[in-house]
Length: 323
Ligand SMILES: Nc1ncnc2c1ncn2[C@@H]1O[C@H](COP(=O)(O)OP(=O)(O)OP(=O)(O)O)[C@@H](O)[C@H]1O
Ligand SMILES: [Mg+2]
Image (tube, helix red, strand yellow):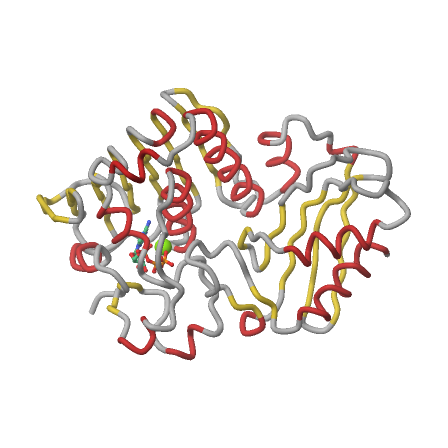
């Protein structure tokens, strides 16, 4: 039996589904998250024309069998959750079984994949319709090429911003995910040129040197704290260093990059008196909370999370920073 199943109706109705693919960066995010969930140690991301012409993500993860790869192109097809209980303690980045189906329906997609025990397969899909399924000889892992994004939905294409804006969104995302996974080597190629490659050494300092060129490691201090089931680890700017008027969102909850207002607020409270009102310190925060206390099934893009114990988390972050 394969690993992918179609989720039963009662779970489908509970999933925050919808606009998963708004713009090229959404595709990059979904594909890279799939690679991480597949246990990849190396992920190569290639973009042409800000993702409109090509988005390609290649990993050396566990791959898919032919049947799983075909099944995975359906909505609500996933190997990551099985029942309602799983939905309330999500450990993987993906869980809805939506991303591949959504991307495939608005692009021309090629999948090349191979597992340790199955023969490799090549699948060509256009606008959601499978056109070819052929044997493929390659190494273990998965490569997904998304061409001509939104070729069949001109309305969505019209909503895209300038190429510079779209490609900045992509590079910012890849940098963030590379920071969150220092043990994975990420190579980012834009219009044929490698923009950066992280080592996969497991050391966040190595990633910072490679992707955050304007940050001096000497301006940062490491901090960590635990309290019951909560733990936090991160890097903060030393007093007087690297302040900015814009909050930077390097916040990760259980290694998921999230946007969360109360984390910003807790950070500001923690810095109170040490930084001018209206300014933000530079901070990379990794917060770990029990899986069943954080709801990631809030928004279709999975960018928002809800904490069951918001107040406790808030004071935990604030106190950890004050320390
Ligand atoms: N790079 C990959 N390597 C191995 N398996 C993959 C890869 N990408 C997708 N899959 C398989 O295909 C399934 C469907 O992927 P898809 O992204 O559509 O859904 P998901 O990751 O389960 O949930 P979500 O919609 O939240 O991302 C996955 O559950 C996984 O089993
Ligand atoms: Mg996914």
